[in-house]
Amino acid sequence: MDGGLTYPYLMAQNARNTGSAQVTVPGIITESARIKVEAADNIFFDISNAHFSIVQTTTPGYALSVNPYTEPLHCQPNPLKYIIYSTRLMAFNAPVQLQLTTPLPQGSVFQFSKNPIQPGDSSVLTITLANTPNDTLDLVIQASAQGGPTIQRTVSAATLSNDFSGLALLSPPDGSPGIVLSTPLSWAPVSNAASYNLELATSPRFGSTVLARQENIIGNTFQPSVLLENNRLHFWRVQPVNLCGAAAFLDPFTFHTATVTCTTLESSAPVNIAGAGTPTIESKITVSQSGILNDVNLPWSRSTKNTSAILRSAWLAPKEPRSFYTMATAPSPANC
Image 1 (cartoon, rainbow, N blue to C red):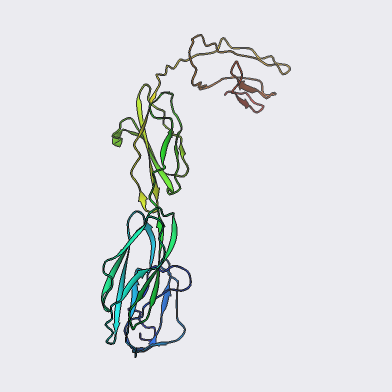
Image 2: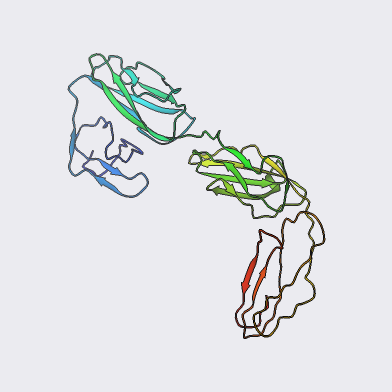
């Protein structure tokens, strides 16, 4: 109002970055008005290059403004709310009829708190969206009055659905028995979730019994790093998260760990390695017990060879498919 020295009137907030916005100028008479546009989340701004004038109207009528013009993040199923303000110009007193002219998604409803309104009054438009994907909606509000202008105002909302009904725990299936040491956890993802939180516990209360907690999981699988307790019931659950926040945890799944017996076995007497040639020497560990072998740990192996050779060691299972580990040592005494 004063040639750009101060900017006391906020005409739009969080407007979309499209290069234009609808605004209602304040009812101030001036010949030195300027507009400043600045980034909502940064320090950059620009000011109009020249003064412009705001003059007194000479025609009876009304003006219309909406707050907010833009809803940058609307979290469903909360309703959208827009306040519609009208301003009387001169002695205009015809009632103003309000309409929402944009078709809404099927199942959605809207309502004006007051319709029609008298010039100078306001009304609240409430919109409850149904079956709306994550999208930006442009909505046209129209006002008309006998003997006055027909005015349209476009408002927008970036909607984000919080429908996580498709989210489901998958593996291990609920009530699974015989889990040994550790197991990957997986679930059916949903498009409305940006990430997931997960908890693994020994009690359905979780809390202090949580063995593993992981936040911001991208994807639909998680491998706990902790070894599970033997012969114990475990509980795990998943929580979806998006920009609107974290939803409630799903009801937990359970699984029961097996009883595991660990036995330490050693190979037979040391086997000599010939000093010449490249012989293959075997040292066997015999497992005499019967049962299911779930895990094998080789804590250490000790081999020695003269410094002029390279020693390669390998551990193999007796039958196919074979899993093995190999290691080559440098030309120096090998102690592995």
